[in-house]
Length: 518
Image (cartoon, rainbow, N blue to C red; front, side, top):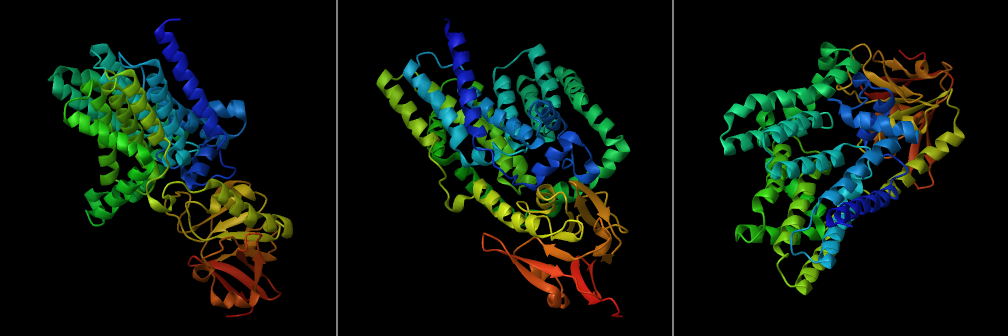
């Protein structure tokens, strides 16, 4: 069997092992608010209801649809897409071994890439989530590796078209790739190729933009549904609008999250950087494009938005691949024993866990699932959904309206805090309600809660958040209040309606009063 075939089989085997390892770690409950948005979009694409979170991540949703047809579960389908992305990273991270690398060292370097894919706190969290971050990082790394091969005219056109297409997974990919191609044009001083590259990128983008607009109801509908989020949540929070106040804190958070994500592999990164500075690294141009791409992604999120460590996936995966490839190439001319020692050390470092305290990235999915199950079980067992209303307060990333509505679809759930990014909300219907896993806008304010139950009769209201009731329940409700104890020793407030009383939502709080009160 020829060596290229062996390498291909090795890479496929590594990818299969990493994917199997991630599949075994899929959480029972979804953690992130965005996971519900993306998973619901697999079967019902509706940006007005944040299905998914605008701008739409259209090709990621399409990939989920393809797997959903086989698996029958949109959450599982999107988790598999993320798992496949980390598996692809592990198979690409080393690639073809440098000339002179011994078989033992080659196996150890590949094992280091696989071990990092499974052991990094960042990949542990987002490699098993129904989110786009792992796909963004893996696609970005693969695209950079192709660019590092210095393709000629047709190859660069293919890269430009691929960049446009990749924007359907996350629009940032098209933006970054365009910047890298522009830099490549400037380096080659081949300005005549700009028009062709631009057309190729536009053609690739059209392959997902056109069906996205079609499913969104046209350009005007897309702008109405996605525009408020892009302006309010992303652009207005960037340093270009908000200024540099708090930027040091953002950089500190990003730096610590990056250190946590790399874990022990940070030592390999430092060693590879030292070799690069001393110009002892092999094939610096081919590998340095990974370093440049990681820096570009880091700079983009530092300037525009950073509210989750998931953004660092596009930094960490190229950076880890660069470090492992550079270190492996630099060690290729060493004696066999030294090669094995270096690769073995990299393997150990790659599987060392977090270097930062408090588990900044790993959120303990199992504990999260246990807490949610404990909160949901007594509600499901003790209340009639026809006369019971469930209340959430605001959008918590790990516990919110969609978590409750998904686990308890037979109940009606109301979110008190107004969410301006749902375009289905308006002045006349400011609140969000969900039943049978479908979100709707309800109102007006004040809102009589009895009008939301299927029977039109309200017997009790269960406040599903165990820690902020004083902010969202008025004192006058104290006469109706009871406590629902969960198996996790948490307390959920319950308001049992008495004859002559009513409960309404007003100014994003629950208010209780006698029906004859003026």
